[in-house]
Image (cartoon, rainbow, N blue to C red; front, side, top):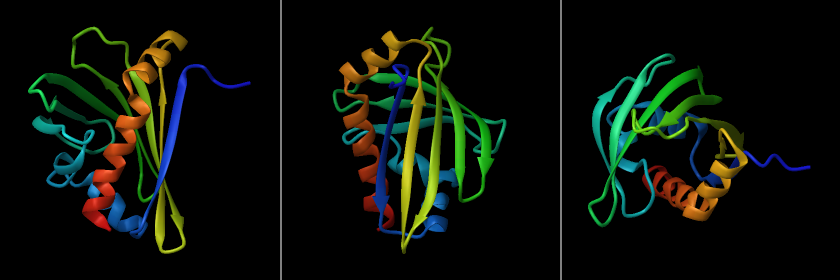
Length: 146
């Protein structure tokens, strides 16, 4: 039986875990690659420690602005980042997300899991292209660190 509220995808990145971790946790680096291909981030507030918040606008290729807030709930160095994602007060139900880091030879296996409030919210995200867009986000990270 599959979990109808969850989306998971991964990417093998040809860089050591420490390098990938740094790109995901350095407040000067993360905004440079975060978001799907063609999107950019404009940071409003950033503190990437456990219990803290990153507030940013995701700017689409057409100039559309998508407010985001990530509240970090767990940091396990070189292993896991967990956060709750929402649209910074716009009414979107929160999404629980984790990014897992695993050494894979001289590379890193990065796995993103997103858990939605309802199966319908998950299906809506899939229909919007969340998996494909997420994979382009990981591709931007890979291009930076490989």
